Image 1 (cartoon, rainbow, N blue to C red):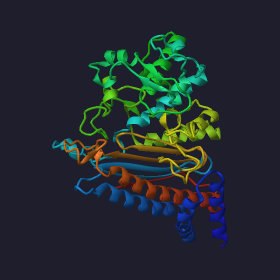
Image 2: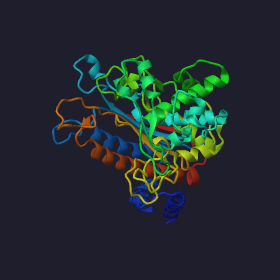
Image 3: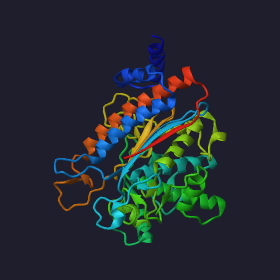
Image 4: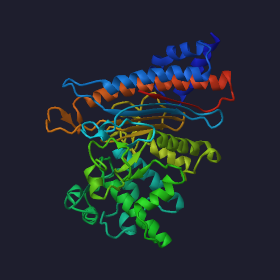
Amino acid sequence: MLKENRVDKIINNLVASGSDINELKKVRNKALELVNKDRSLNETMENVGTSIKDNTEEFLYDTNKDGVRYIEGISTNVYVADFDKGDSSIKVIGGKIKRDNPSLLGYRIIDNDTLFDVASITKLYTLIYAYTVETIGLDLNTQVGMIDSRYNLEDFTINDLIRLCGEIITDGRVNDAKNRDEAYAILRTACLKSNSRLENKYTDIGAMIIADVVTRWLNNRYNTHYTFEKWINDLVFEPMNLKNTMYNPNNMNITGNGNNFGVHDPKAKAFGGVSGHAGIFTNSSDLEKLARGIFAVNNFARNKMNGILHLTREQIARFGEITFPNAKQSNKGNLGLYVKHPLGFDKTFTPSAFSTGSFSHQGWTGALATFDPNNQIHQSILVNAIYESDDKDKVRNDKPVGYGGRFDKYLATLTDDTMIMFIAKKYFDTYINKNNMDNNITFKI
């Protein structure tokens, strides 16, 4: 009865933070069964990890109605941070880096160093970039045209772009550009088809403009001529020690981009692979570092980080902000981050089992990264899902038909295991051993 009461207390604290009680009821008995076995924390994590590995392996080898595998490779990570009592993470990797490449490269096995094309998750880094520059002195409520006269967006501010207000159009399509200069020339024709600030409309254009305009502000302030890539590397990647997060990786151990030799997104390609909306390659280890950096801001524990993320707690809260609760895309917040809708009306990749203020971003390539800053929980699912075929009956959004539903099923099982892991770890940290060390386990399929 004592153990049961303790588990229920942990669950009640999760509910108080905004977690869905019904989702937690689903995992309560499994969590209680784990702590009742009187195992060590490491043995308990091994048990949870085995469940994650089994579900991941099932996803990796599963096929749709046409006999096509949903994915050919995967790297999944569940991470629970604790700056006082030690972190825990469970990683599962498996599969190959190319789906249908007859070369030997196609059969290279995904490992811990494999970089994945994360597509629109790039927007999270762009938002961090903008907020970092805000701490330096940029007022995000400044009109775009006041910073960069090459843009004519009426009285729209950087914050309006972040909030996805209005509707932006360009004279021509960026992905039709023949080179980088032409891509920027097209982007700078951007104008407002609608200047409404009453709802959001998801678009890549705002993130492209933010990267361009914020970089111009920095260069004007410091009398430099650096590129966006240089600035985001100096302000975000390097301080966070994100050595495996980059644009245009020059090694062959990359995946998630189909059979491309660079980024999959055509608009990012037009910009030479470097843009605010897509283009970043990374791995689960660097996403874990990013999560720790985000969580550290809330805990003022920067001395325990490899680097420093120059954000404030108020800015972290904006990542999970529900910007337009009554809009058609109420599931999307600042720069398109998926947020928790208070009424659960709209599909979101942010689990209802996570706390209020949690957020995630999902890319066209199928990758997903989720963050719960309050409970310090992070999930990432990086996949090789792009399916290149001329048969349109077998392909939807560049992935095998049925991928979306199968991914949702996998995410649901992963989230259940994540919450079991969190409850078990919290139980050990609170009641068994208050001086736990970091606990990191990797499974290979």
